Amino acid sequence: MAAPEVPIDVDRSTGRWSTDSLPMLYVPLHFFVNNHRAIEAEIGRERYAELLYHAGYTSAWTWCEHEQREHGINGVAVLEHYITRLSQRGWGLFALVECDLTAATASIELTNSSFNDAPGLANESGDYMFTGWFAGAMDQILDAQGSPRRTCARQVSLEGRNGAHRGLFRVIPA
Image (tube, rainbow, N blue to C red; front, side):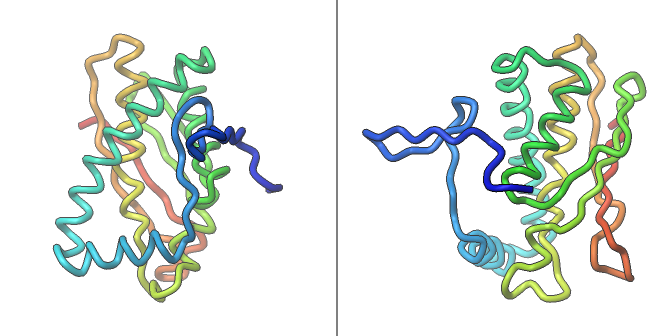
């Protein structure tokens, strides 16, 4: 990938960054990871994963809803756009392996996770924070199509663990 592939607009009067009219932050990886680890250490990985799932779910729903309107896209194209933007913003390289809106399922692959090279996370990963993102994205897409179905997501494999060269997330009906 080349230098930022996402459009970055900077408001000269406030210094705020935005992409597709949504406010963005640009922070050093160590800053984010240090915050992540501190919260995880304080409240425990299981509780933090639960909180991140729900926060990520809501955020992905909001983002997908906005991008549908902003770009006039719908259905699987929204999920593809979401996965592309996550990759372009440095979280790792995500790929949509499969998506079936009728079955309310999807598989998302992750390589080169930002957590893999993060300082202080040797043999660990914070990739669990991504899980709610995929259910939130899928549910917003289903809702926009008038479907009452809802999903949940889980991490099936973790990049770097047990020789895995990729992480895999699976979205299934709730």
